[in-house]
Length: 211
Image (tube, rainbow, N blue to C red; front, side):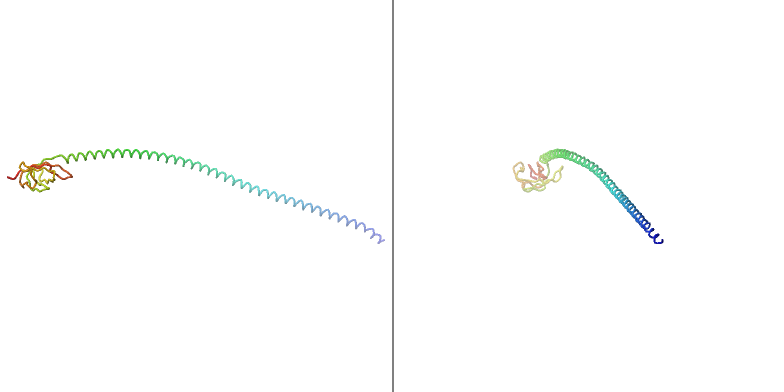
């Protein structure tokens, strides 16, 4: 009787073992599936995180590009303004250069005219001085000394006068042609002279002896 009970429990044990093995297998597959699902979700989350990071980098680069474009626009605007200033400065320089050349030309013409006027005035003054110097003057007085080259006489209106003599000086003594050394000190003298090179030069001398 006991033997039959044991034999009867063998199929039940076998069935229980088979059922437990099947449940364990189902649980293992479920866990595996859950693990795979979790891993898939993790990979999706990692991919989403990576995509977010890449998007942030793209936005950062976009900001940098926008800033560079703004800087480029500002630099181009400054370049255009500087070029405009440079062109205006060049035009001003050309205008000032033209005005300076015109002014210099005008000043040169005026200077030339002034130089011509001054030269003409100087020439006139020189001619007037020459006329004054070459103008014949007369003097009367008494001879103080006489030599071949010089006659010194004393006059009442011109004081002591030293006259230079040369070969062109005409000398008469007592109404006759003579020479300067024939003029006696104290004799009366009437002379005509011109100022030549600042020196009174006798043109004609008329002398009488002291007696």
